[in-house]
Image 1 (cartoon, rainbow, N blue to C red):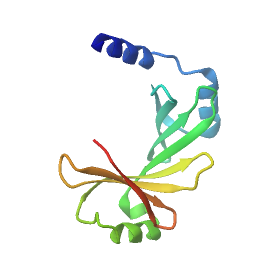
Image 2: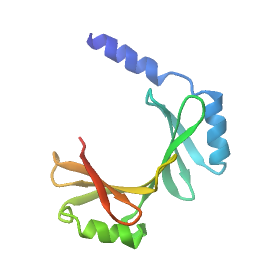
Image 3: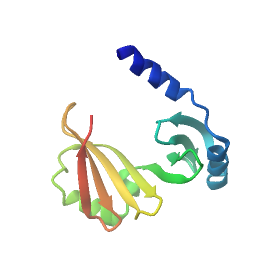
Length: 139
């Protein structure tokens, strides 16, 4: 059974990115640089640089845009997000990364990855007005 998962995983990684996906990406991000693609079975993910920001964008196999993530520095966050974070119970945790997340049909949100130790890590999701909407444990 273990070999089945390895083979399935390898096959998933070599699936060709459909032309509809690459065309949709080029249309949405015409100035993207250093583009690389990953197939995560549910969608195709492009990692790229745009205006000096590390970005990720996900598309379904029909080329429909699903989500974009823009890596940011904490100092670049809107004041409402900084305020919301400072009021959270995680200010004594180490901040690992900060992303602005734009999803199709969903409001803008911000994700902050924090860790307290090598084992305790959480994603904190804030709305644009600085409210901590949810947190999730990660590995």
